[in-house]
Image 1 (tube, rainbow over the protein chains, first blue to last red):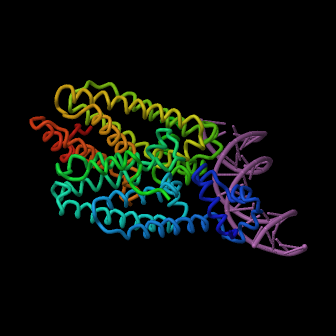
Image 2: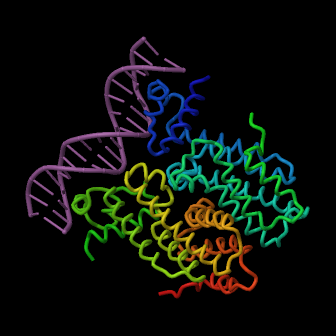
Image 3: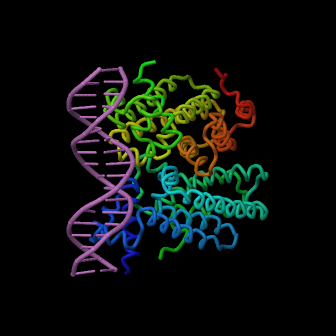
Length: 208
Length: 208
DNA sequence: GTCTATATCGGGATAGAC
DNA sequence: GTCTATCCCGATATAGAC
């Protein structure tokens, strides 16, 4: 593997483990057993590394937004988003200060979040139209708010409570919360029980 | 007003406006038109200031947890909590990194959050017992999760979206979200419409 | 209590040899 | 591509005069 790729992987790991703020360029170089000078040969600095990571995250999210729109896909979309957000969780833990420190990132991530929200609205509206969900379009809007909030902030919330974030299965906990929010709006004869079971079994998507 | 108090007020304002990370001791001194040396006479350093602010926040939350438990008090409690959290919002914007930088704060805030959660559970259970809310105790647990998540993370979420946090009325937006989460669980003849109207009118508590 | 001046320290960044 | 050595700068913190 090329050094420049290794730098990204190790940086991501360190940022997630100890926070971006507490991770210096020297830390990264040391963890990789290379010299700081070498690191600066590959990336102009920490901001360069972070920008590369952000671009990689954005590419991931964009890639998984190519789904059709049946019911299961709604949760699959959430699952894949959460999986990626978990992988890049350092970005969301202190997005405010990262944004102010590294200009340009804020807008990128904000645009992406807006896009994700719109995608979710599309999926929700589809579920409403085909009768899986019952509710006015105002209800859908408010549901969308709660779902977005849960999607983007649940990892922070778990961390605030002191829960470990190392296990990627934590995303199922978020999915369960979202399922519960939607629960009152499912039509009686919908297939929501199947979804609930898949979440509980952590078998929403086949593990690779 | 004593200098030591002025330091706390200005620090809080700067932390909220530009982030704790981007605010140096010199910034604080400069904003107050005092010398950095003077600032260090009153506080050993930034960590000392932040600890004082945290203690002040904790005292505020503890003070407002002395309420009885009728329905309105549930939202009033949320309102006062949100108001305080808005006042000290810098603490929640990057709680992870602040915690790792200033040891001791993490545990304090975590304990407090746990206490707030328990208080909410008590209020919710009361509403369930007196029939205002319908739902199993499992439902109450899951509702509590969503409400806590919304309570502690909504400000972050708004900021991520790029919404301004300067207007304290933003807490009503959070209250509306929480109301909507509870909405399906209200008994038909409960007084929830009154609450909804109070939130919409931003008249839940009389302004002082 | 408050100031000025200064010491210290750590992270970011570069130059130049290999 | 990688290393060593070094510079630079900004933030923290202290000393001592007023």
